[in-house]
Length: 457
Ligand code: ADQ
Image (cartoon, rainbow, N blue to C red):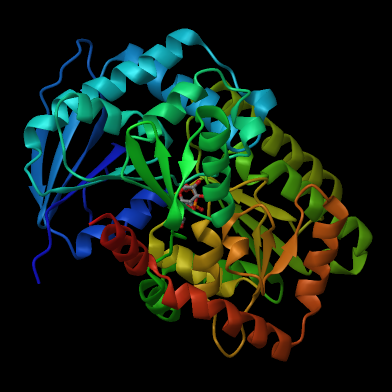
């Protein structure tokens, strides 16, 4: 079967690495699957900074993929990446309007870098290539490419939530971004709720005309908007988890636990993941169930991310404050209530740790999908699975309705869910787990990439 060449564009490019090193980021994990079937090219920022602007890319070939990367200037990184993308768009799209900090200079920097990306990429594009652009950093890219006479089909996948129109409208510049996004032929969101929010913004703000099949006519453009819930490589996680017992970290954890039961959380350190709130709920659980003190251990793995953005330093302080308070006031000689580590782990080790845990705590305040929820489920022992506690505000809740679904803003509800999960009988655990494994296996990462690319082609 003939497959067109695939060009993937994302802010950062993760050059393939078979060493199974940990990379804490959902996008890199998800995209690895897309290149397993298509020959292709991956374009984006190298992660490096150079003093002078350059649009001459560096090219690296590896495992059937050509990586084409450019460096950014300190100003680009500040305005485009730390600024508009991560201090304005990210909080607004996660419904944290109060944390959003708009600056016109950052917005102009965001548009400028999108223009730089388009100019550097255009010479590599051949007729017939399928183009797939990823995430909120690059909303204007199709418009920039089309201005350079690129006429290929271009799809866009939005990995984070698309907020309700009233929320989006609080951020200056978004009417222009809506005009830009309409240049894509296909726009994928995680959930139907996100797709609906985007359609409502386009209709309300730009007077777009809805047609059959989720297509919107926006001026001279026709964009199709559909949800494609992103999946994981379920088979890999299952295999890693069932073989992970010998890994050093896993053995060490087993020894350290003794007869205690493990509760696990794995997240990038980000305010959207609700870590201080989660720790507060665990504290409430220990206060209300004093018989559980010394009988459970909560392991929170949270590698730092975006540390140059002030709100991330603030969440790090909040986490450390909660950690000190809880471990100081509830810990006892020989028992630490929360173990907190900031190290990235290989995927195989993470899978082993998930499998050890009686409870998976996935309680984001908002999340596009949340792959950790699916990884936790896939890693469980089928005969004796643990219980997933999942926020209703994670996209994953749309598929994993057999998890224990909670509202992360209600500490007591989460505390009670932890208690119930620890007490849940084997039959109920198995029933819930089997129900969740059906979508986790069926709608895996290969399904996601194939479904999007088929539709785009
Ligand atoms: P993220 O916000 O990064 O992703 P998530 O979906 O949970 O969140 O993905 C994180 C990934 O990083 C997981 O695969 C996890 O295993 C890995 N990871 C986390 N901590 C790690 C550690 N210490 N060591 C190694 N690996 C670690 C964004 C959106 C999500 C969306 C994804 C994919 O915010 O909502 O699900 O993209 O679309």
